[in-house]
Structure formats: C-alpha cells, structure tokens
Length: 117
Image (cartoon, rainbow, N blue to C red):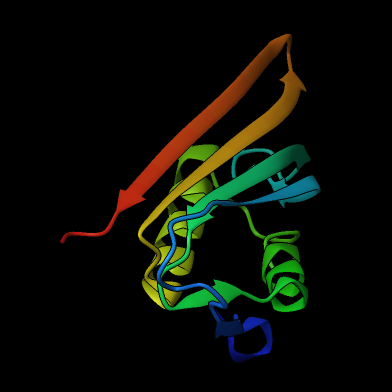
C-alpha cells in the first residue's frame, strides 16, 4: 500500500460490544492482468470492530488505488482482507468481491479473517 492511499481509523465508540459494520463499494474497478481490460464489480466489507473502525474517506482512496492495477480477483480479495484486517485488527472480517459477467461467467470471491483469542 502506498503512502498516498494510507488507511485511517478512529476509535470504536463501543469497544465493549460486538456489532457489525457493512461497507459496500458498488463501483469498484481494477484491471485484468492478462488483457489489461477493466474489471467492474462490487466489494462488500463486513466486520466487527475491536478498538478501531475504518474511516470511509481513506477507504475510498485505498479502493481507488486498484483502478489501474492488474490483479486477479482472488489476489485482490485476499489483499484487501490482509490490508484491512492487518491495519485495524477487527474481531472478525469478511470481504466479498462480486464481479460483473465476462464471457457469460460471473465470479464471487469470499475471504474471511477471525482474530485469535
């Protein structure tokens, strides 16, 4: 992750409580590493914060950093999960990527993280 796309966080207002946050990024774009053509999809981030929550403006810029990156769906989904869970250490997190059809085939990738107790 580059400095210009650094994620920011804020203190969880209710760290004593388990609750979930769902963030939808319905206009996600990246590039196919084989053809260089754009891939369009939706990224769904669900998590239970521990000490911090993800600040949305910084998340928007982070997600936009993939716009010109050639990356396979599987790597992309796992990279997002690794970056976000590594930075904010939630109690649990799930990242789902759903890409629009290409050649009549749709793809959905789900990656999950759970904090060790």
